[in-house]
Picture 1: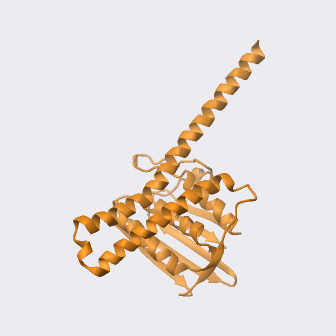
Picture 2: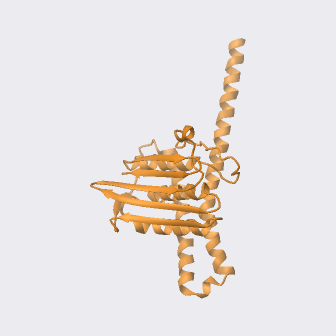
Picture 3: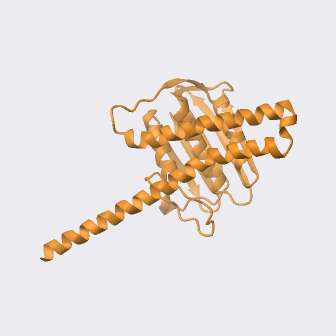
Length: 242
C-alpha cells in the first residue's frame, strides 16, 4: 500500500512538472511570436496614421519592414518546429554565404522600431564585407534573439554594440549591452530550456526561456559555441564563435 501511494505521488508530481513545462513553453512561444507582429503593426500604423505613406522612401521602408516580419513569422514557426526536430535525422540546415552587415542591419531597424524605449545599436564588422556560411533563417533568428534580450534587459534606454570579427578561419560575433546584467550564480543556467533569470522589479520582462536555448542549439548546429560574460548592474556580452 505504501509503495502504491508513493508511486501515485510520483505520478502526480510528474504530471505537475509536465503541465508547468507546457505552460512555460506556451508563454515563451507566445512572446516570441508577438515580436514580429508588434514590428509589422508599428510599421503599418505609421503608414496609416502618421502620413508616412506620402513619402515614397518612407513608404518603401515600412513596407519592406512589414514584409521582413512576415518572413520572420514564418521563420519562427520553423524555429518552433525545429525544437521538436533537433534530435531527428530529418532536421537540416540550409547553409549559404551570408554578408553579416547586410543580415544584421535590418534586424537593428526592426528592434528600434518596435521597442518601447530608445534603442541605440552600433554595428562594427571587420572586414567590412565579412561573410559566413550559415542558414539564413536560423542565423537571423539567433542574432534577433540576442538583440531582443539586450533591449528587454535595459532600463530607460538601450545601448547595444554588435561586433563581428574574422581571425583566420574563425568568425566571432559579440552582442553587448549596458543593461541590468546577470548574476554570476545564474549564468550557468541561462541556456537551459525554459529557464528565466529573476528580474526583480522588471515585471514586464518575459525572461530567458525558449530564446537562449534555441540560440545555443542553433549555434551548435552551425558548429560553433556561445558564451556569456556579465555583471549585475553593468550589462552582458554574448559571444558567438564559429
